[in-house]
Amino acid sequence: MQDGTKLIAQSLSSSISVQEKYKGIVPDQAAREQLESILPVIHDVLTTSQILLTSIDAIAVTVGPGLIGSLLVGVETAKTLALAWNKPLVPVNHLIAHIYANWILENSAVNLPQFPAIVLLVSGGHSELILMHNHQKFELLGSTRDDAAGECFDKCGRLLDLPYPYGPYIQTEAEKFVADSAELVVNFPRPLSDSQNFDFSFSGLKTAFLNKYNELRASNYKFLVPHLAYELQESITDILVKKTVRAVKKYKPRSVLLAGGVAANKRLREKLQSTMNREFGSTVNLHIPPISLCTDNAINIASAAFFNYHPQKIETVSAQPGLHLND
Image (cartoon, rainbow, N blue to C red; front, side, top):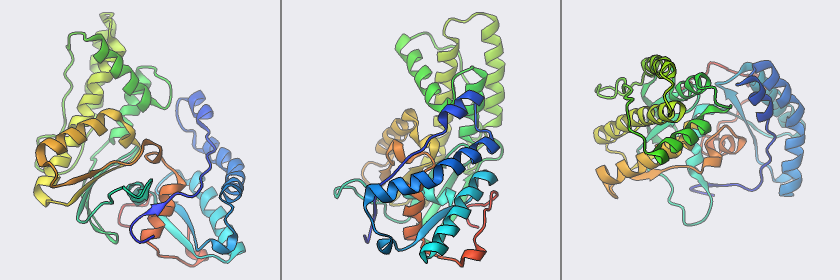
């Protein structure tokens, strides 16, 4: 395909039950789970798609950033298959792959992003604004100075003793508070939201959350969890949307792209959509990937490899847990 990629087959093996047990990801455990599931998943995809090995052009693999154990499982498996099947091996930056969820065609009526594009990339460990000039040039406009938005969600969700993964449960609790229509008494700060740069900071918000949690818990406040979840979500999404709008006004892109795990948050999606419509109308196209493509997955990796096809010699490909956007 010339302008977009199409999903032919997929297979999922989840270790969420293990992560729920430990209230988060245990790196060694995650790597063991991946080691057990990766070959069955590959076999399942090949069987479901009925694609012959001769029809496969290349193998794409995440090399970073991420947990070293999980990266090693994926990289070494991909290198083995590339060698056994005599296929080119394309290393992919996990951060860039999130962006390419916006190029996966679900139907022929989908409008694809146009350049230049502003990208709001928000995941567990990253909060970044990127100016995407084309498929080969990514300019980092700003990033987090401390905690990322996803980390803030996670740490506050753990404090509230919500189940893992915390983001969806914070969203659910926030919706309960809106439904109850209780009087709003909590107002968290929006760090750096009024600064003229494009950096983020969420550590101060996390501290304010902790202080208010201790205060309200001591008073047996009736709507403790829903209220705190609601205002936390409002604060984080306000910051992300305001910074994105500022970048659009300065750089005047043709498209705005949302990407990353936090992009699955309904409030962020709604708020970004309504704000973009109000501020820019039809002059800037907003692209938000399906929720199923926001989290880490191999579909995005393949999409990114298609548009950034730079195969490398098998022996030079290695896991790079500290990989940055433009590395």
